Image (cartoon, rainbow, N blue to C red):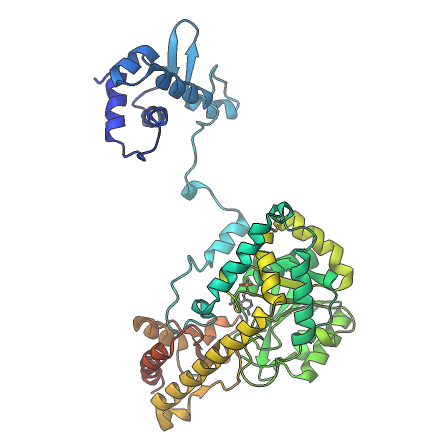
Length: 504
Ligand SMILES: Cc1ncc(COP(=O)(O)O)c(C=O)c1O
């Protein structure tokens, strides 16, 4: 049998340590591994520090430091005048169960459960059962993705450097009071001018994006079991949040004028109403003025909150951006939210939520208590980016690029599909957003076409998968913003072939 010195020498020689890891850490790791593998069992006596130092050819201080660390973490204990012994790791869990306690209970060495063996909560299981899994790599025609390569890196670097040079310690703190004030001021200005939002700076909260804005609304404005009206088809992100907060989802049909309330819907009483009125996600419908007024009236009557997700209104390729629903609200029932995910880049994780005056204090304190926001340095750079006019310039530039890509995709598909299919397939014609909807006849299995397209490296999404109720329309969501003209031309041809094969 190997002596303890030989065992540790062997482990040290065989383990692939980081080259800069100090000798005492190596010895500590080797001993810990031997204890975990029970090569050194409970009660085994370790050699004296002098002997082990000699056997391993290292200094005695190094051995003493490693032993001290092992003792501090409960792997070994020393008995006065006798030596150092391996502790009984099982004793800890026994004492935790109240079965009895060992004299030298290790602190950090309690047996750890593996992730697989930890049962999730009931809510956790429900949530993960439909989780999409890790984010996939963006492939041609993935809907919703913008072209981050057009981000003004150099300019951003200058703005960011300036903030860091100022060395303002207050910007290293959590983002208190709803976020960095100059950013909230810049957003207020932008929303008033570009989106006709009725807003004072106190109403603007900086969040880490729409997902967080929605989650805050769900937590603060609804209780478990309350009803949320959602558009059908619906943005999956909003659906997830409401499901996670255990709200009852009530799907409302969407037509070419947006959310279309029917008698049966009006018989229910929602706490929340989630809408994308400027550009319904995913169909692209713009909510008519009549419907907007009706919805506001219903919200007042039912004492419900409207959550207006204005996620991509910067991308309107002809005419002026449409006014927000919030601007028509005279009763403070609308919470308006926007994001920089699309206009700048998703990883910036900055969005904004405009709440009615009566909700300001509640939302501010919940934002702080529940989310602990931060990133004031980035918020400061973004505030400058907007205030100095770069934001408007950037939007103008990408709007042109995306508008041209949209047109190219449309032309490519129309041309490739040919006159015959033009009768049965409709390509959405509204001049905004980041994707087109290619609407297919009801009999076509759009999920099968999505899979078929994926085989050609194309990442379109089936329209039917966005429905809660049985789907009433079939089609494919085709993103173009991320695709260069060359890719649009090449993959557009492949996609047309996929569509042809499914429709014939
Ligand atoms: C309708 C809609 N809202 C919001 C978002 C994104 O918001 P955020 O990244 O700020 O959570 C998306 C992104 O795809 C979206 O489609």
